[in-house]
Image (cartoon, rainbow, N blue to C red; front, side, top):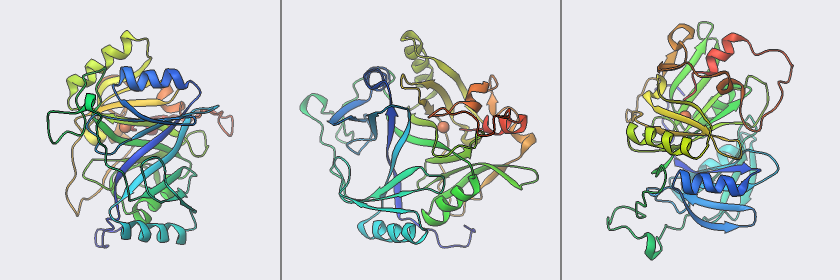
Length: 338
Ligand code: FE
């Protein structure tokens, strides 16, 4: 979308993310006891959870499955009319799957796939969260009591997806969904698009696409929850380590978004980021920041280089389509994920 194009504000924000897990009990323990999220509902193979600061009833849906990875990614529309407009635009783009009656606590929803094949939906109507008495906060503007359990993540922040063709997915997210492009990584004098970070809100990015070095489709790189400061990220590192959770990278600072990060694997194998300190973007005429090969360096602003697993591992885990080793230049590229 050029700077002159009329912006589309039909999507309000990232609503929730569904994660598949082959270890549902252990994954629930990770998100409930270690990250401090609150379970609010169960239905069939799924448990719905929330961060204490999330206004929505549920922002994470954990679904027992034979493999890991991401299920449905849900976006809240800005109004009923906005929902209809986006459903039509997505349908016209040939990516619509159709209307459903909506997931837990929500009204009718329009389901679709992004060009890479990830399943998404848009909804508008949503039941407001009402805390049960034991979770009632004394702060009138806090939806739920701060329990102080585990890392006490406040809210959902973003997710990073892998895509075989980043440009096609970035175009869909900006031109059809209406997200603002915030930052990009482009190699070969701008010709090769390695990663794009976008958002429908002032939050730096709510959706990232980075190239899938294995040439697969529909995979998740990570799901990210917000804490309020860097100390909370480091406290989370202590809590996770005390409980035998593998920490893959961080705590450290990204150059892209300036975010302070900690990556661990939840017991189902999905990579989860605990994240803080990124900057907000409020400019309607924001010029996307583009980084090239030299500027990205190791992908971190400071701290240790991200490990090879950060480049090669995503969920579900697959073998490379070609069987060929991953080129060094792509390793550098994906190490820039944030
Ligand atoms: Fe991230």
